[in-house]
Amino acid sequence: MTNKMWGGRFKQDQDLLFWKFQSSIHYDKVLASYDIKGSIAHAKMLGKTGIIPVRAAQLITSNLAKMLKDLENNSFKIDLSAEDIHSAIYIALKKKIGDAADYLHTARSRNDQVVLDLRMYAKDKISVLTGLIKKLQSALVNVSKKNIDVIIPGLTHTRHAVPILLSHQLLAYVEMFERDSKRLFQARERCDEMPLGACAMAGTSFVIDREYVAKLLGFKKVSQNSIDAVSDRDFVIDILSAIAILFMHLSRFCEEMILFSTPEFNIIEIGEAYCTGSSIMPQKKNPDALELIRGTSARAYANLNSIMIMMKGLPLSYNRDMQLDKEEFFDSVDMTEKVLTIMSGLVKSIMINKNNMLKVFEDDESLFALDIADYLVRKGLAFARAHTITGKIITYCADNRLKISALPIDKLKRFTSKFDESFYKELDAKRSVVKKSSTGSTNPIFVRQQINKWVKRLKD
Ligand code: ARG
Image (cartoon, rainbow, N blue to C red):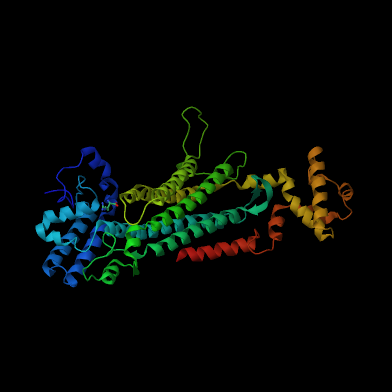
């Protein structure tokens, strides 16, 4: 028996090297279960509408159902000499039930079949990925909750800016990952269109029941333009771009955790389970997990880029180029699954160097510059004026190697008479964060509210 779904028109066999080059079975085999489920629904519909004999439909569906079971318990061997997974399943069925299998491909083409499989795969995988994002968010919320009292230097331009709660910073990532989740959910909505019935591109002359197939396979609606149905890979690009943005967030988080765990910042420590050592420098404990995830984001971007470029010049409708969407698509999905799982574990392993965080604010009182300026505003100065005076005090202290807290009040009064003894308590990180009062700010009351909100939201 031939291992092709076509061949009648050919006098010659394909060149061996070309045959291997064009075969997609080595990667599209991950679609096997979807392909079988799609075929079961299609055969049921063909039987129900009387397009094929009911007995043939029953034989096909019962044997495909058995095949699906075998696949699930690893006893179905996929024939890797087949051209693609659609051919492999069809040929396996034909081996089992003989000529009755020939009815299955009525009113169907691999062009609509492959999009169906891909859409089913995408819908399932998005549910897995959003579940994993939720776990990562929960891990971040947990660290935030446990360390609600930790104040760190907030950064702009990677330089000390103002005191903030570490939890506030971590919750910023929870917001980012929430947007990633939403993007994936929205992409899932756009996947939820059943393309079968488009056939090669123009539809079919048989009176098929597409809504029935959609219902059997759990699709919300059926596609409305058969040409678009087989030409469209927007849903793949949608997901790849949501993944690319997710990786941008992951990569920024990695970069920050690498910085925060350096002896220079000394804010956190990464659990040893996520570090490796050096073969020459015995002292090293390197944040390799974070570096590799940051590095892997390049591949997430490349995969998106690759499909965008592959698609951009194609005339409608199906072109074989489109087979090449799969490796990149599957790669990005697999990579995201792995990375999110590792990242959740890594976040759980993070330890906070609380004592060092108290010292930072002693060593660098310039972190209170904005608090000083705001103090002077409250004492009656215009902000720009307060800004200039504070700047002069900072420079004076830097030039003379003095701490601001060490300046006596008469010295301070030389900068402006607005200073009085109440000033010194401004040089306090805790006071600084508590004084923040705008919604969404680093005030512990707001941050605690946010933590409670996330705990609740992530539970269901
Ligand atoms: N393996 C092909 C793909 O992934 C299936 C569709 C092939 N259709 C065709 N007419 N050659 O796109």
